[in-house]
Length: 605
Image 1 (tube, rainbow, N blue to C red):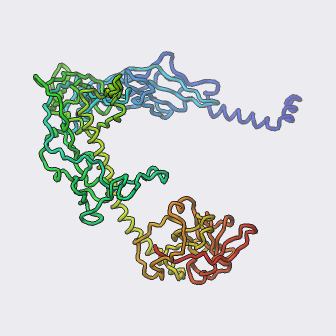
Image 2 (cartoon, rainbow, N blue to C red):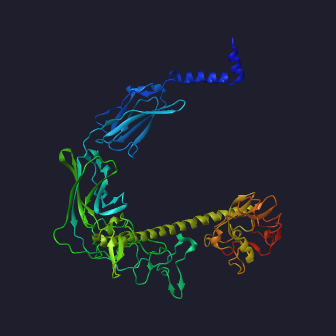
Image 3 (cartoon, rainbow, N blue to C red):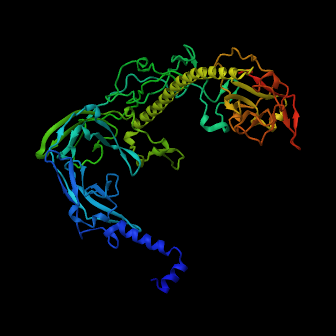
């Protein structure tokens, strides 16, 4: 029997029975978790062990005995990070574990101490996360040399991540730790070095001109053109002529030899090569690069150095101990500014037992290190003026370059510029090859398009049309409407065309179009630069049965030009549309025939 209070409550709140039912269901779903939470035993840590003595790269993390109310857990997260690093560092890992799981086997690097912690997440009314304390665990193993491939050892200069410069007083010897099994189980890595007496380059070519080809700074847009001519004088070099045709890699540049270094075509050894300049050229260079054929940089030791007296310098020994957390093991060793060195790398296991050695790891001349990016001269050199007004030149050591290293720096600067020139030549060649493939593809594509237009019944089967006017005022007021249009597809049962930059010359056969080979001199079309600014389409308006121009296909507004209504032309350049083109008046917006307008089929393309 219901009480008066219950009946009043139900009348005031019609949803009251439903709320009670939902509360009961929630209790049934969560079971014994209603009013209780999952938690860890106070101060508890996960238990970490090595399941197999033969596999030190696997450990098992278990938390079975430290979890309370495990059935209330929605998910676990297992945290793992090297000892001595932060849990938020890139070397830390966080793995989600299913809620019914209370142990997990994970991978580790032997001889590196790891910290482990488990986090639980419980989502009831709101999300709750709780962490265990940390467990430190480390496995042990015996290091072994897999393959000390000498070509994998790299000698260069240390990059200072704080100052953001290459320190030319500190050599860097690095190699992949994957060459060693269990690298962090080594006792230490030792590096020693001996200076190599550099010899002047005998094959240094005499060209001092950076560029002898025409260059246009396209990345500056149309706001700046560096190529200016007054009479026979030019601000930039003349264009390149090709000895073997437009695609020949053999370029004629008069008496000045061609320039251009290739990134990657450098020697890891001393640069005292006596090979001829011609033998350094790569036959892979094609296209119209303004820098000529790809060549090997040959600048090292071309500037004079102060004569050194006494014995050659020694470097090291320097020892580096594990753990090695990065993919590459790096050893930094102080070396004489920019001098060439040969280094020896030795690997020692515990008890100072040598297990591997690599000799003659060569630190080449600075100009022969393609990974070295020289800082700008303005960051390296300083200029002051004394009371006499004469300039005093100095070196900014914060750039990483010292005064003793200036000759090597200038050589490296030239070599770096050459590598950039080679890169330009390489990509110019790739672009030329790519354009040839695109032209071939366009030829096949346009043949298919012509067949489509022919099947539709077009008299003009060319996929290219030209919309022009002989009235300068009309072009000036509507420049975006005029230009070259290309067939794009079908709309409302008729073909439609899109305005595109005209780069069509020679791309396909002109047979069967019935187009002319020359354009009337009085015809005016929009410049190419304007053609790419706004979209414009030519399509058939099925409602009024006319061909119109608009910014989008199927648009009913923004139309300024079109053919006469009820047009019988299957395609806009067909004879039934000729002489019927009209434009809307500027006041009332009514169609008015305009004899200056013309849609031509493949005119002067």
